[in-house]
Amino acid sequence: MCSLPTSIEAVVFDCDGLLVDTEACWTVAETAVFAAHGHTFGPEQKALVIGRTVEDAGEAMAQYLGRPGAGAELAAELLETVRKELSRGAAALPGAAELVRACRAAVPIAVASNSPRELLDTALWSAGLTDYFPHSFAADEVRSPKPAPELYLTACETLGVAPKRSVAFEDSATGIAAARAAGLYVAVVPSLPGTDLDHDWLGTSLAEPELRAWVRGLGRDTAW
Image (cartoon, rainbow, N blue to C red):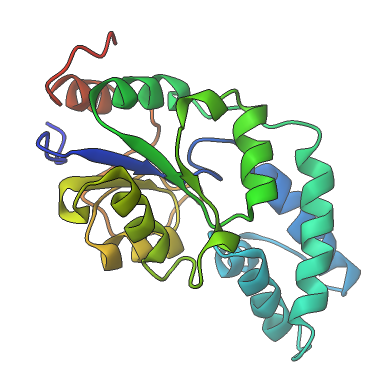
């Protein structure tokens, strides 16, 4: 049985690595930045930047690479490369479109992403998910993005629901911290294997049968 409540009134999704397979784009870009500064890039380095805003990732890379004060420069390098990679397209992850469609038929939904608006819109459009979301919120539209709770609080306020009556779907520790701080239940599909993440529900895919059963229990016919 899924450990998520069926009495919730809204669902808020992260985007990168959760709905859309953009982490490959980010990894290519991150690898290029590290290589340009004489360092390899692997799981340890990925854990430093995953789920962060571009600006925070730049600062984390600057510290790791021993270049204090170079955060903005590294962030600009990262953003430019991600922009190029994402322009080639990114697909929806398994089960993402079906889950989003089913949740939307039952309760209000939104996206809360730590990407800037430009990259968020490109990712959703590329994956064919744009029309499912009347509401989406990007990192550059709030004062304090994840791991602060503002993105999730803004989403819930816009949807007219209490955070404690909402579920967040996340893939990273940064996003989970934001959802927890805002007071939402948290469903997690990790994009970085082998990580121990806080959760109310944990799975390997958005296509898992448990989630299908959970959505059917939300009280409306979702046509799954």
